[in-house]
Length: 88
Image 1: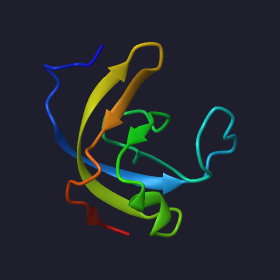
Image 2 (image 1 turned 45 degrees about the horizontal axis):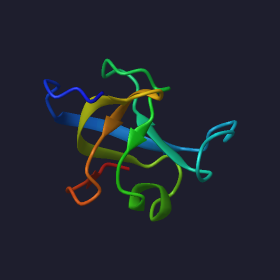
Image 3 (image 1 turned 120 degrees about the vertical axis):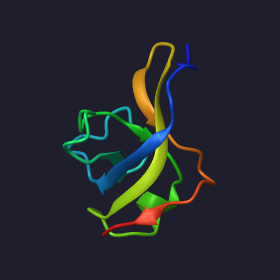
């Protein structure tokens, strides 16, 4: 059920360790940083390098768009091969 009219924009995201990983893959995840109009509970689909190659809490600037998947709700999507700016 994608959102084809939603535009890509620059978003600051950060890695974090969720208190519960029930239903999630892996122990480190990516979420939008606070203060950008996205809830910090929103999931981010992006390159796994962000959660594997940098310490937990690192911030990144990525190009992403709000989308959704049938039965899964909304999330931010950024292609895994797109450039990432490490903000720390």
